[in-house]
Image (cartoon, rainbow, N blue to C red; front, top):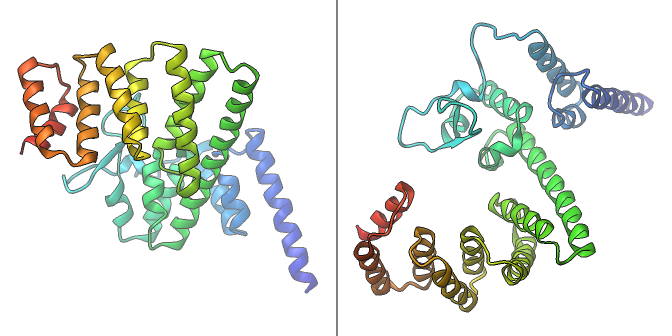
Length: 295
């Protein structure tokens, strides 16, 4: 009995040392690696040390094993760009990465993600959370929980700032932008998502009352109301959007989403003809959406 208590205390001390080492940049690994050390006695600490020495000595071992190693070879798989500053070669083929046969490779990939910037790999982590490999699932879920906690802290900070100065447009803009990014990550579910979509709706309504509202504001607001199935409010926003941005592709795309949500096939056809008739400028992404509805 005493031996287990001693081992537990020893593990907690070592974990605390790992935390301090990461905090003071003695260990050259990402802060999320602390949870690996904490929840995986011995092996977690060993993994942290191996990664530390690999980074410290710039070790490659001849082959660059990691997220960047994987290239998209088939159109059957989708890729997620991890950083706009990185070249196109540095993309993560999510399904391919998780379907590799070797457990060692899967775990190496997830460790690389945790040691880089997990917030840039949300979709990858969500896929990994459903993997058959329990260790990969553990790493992915731990990272997503930590990201959610960080998001909550930042949202609470915005809430405090907004409560102090409700008419401050700069704070309100930062609040709505960050809340929308959190909703877009799909980490919120159930009642938490419902409440935050209601909050976003009220904040955006206030912002549009204080400012003219950018085209992106209207686009987000319409999409949010459609997700809430509040079609009356979505329709009202589209009327405002048409008045302010009558010939924008964003308006027509939002209107198309609105009609699709209501299942109005004939009206969609009429809208597509209207777009062609007015020669609305369309980006390649919007053209692909319209091609889907025209087929």
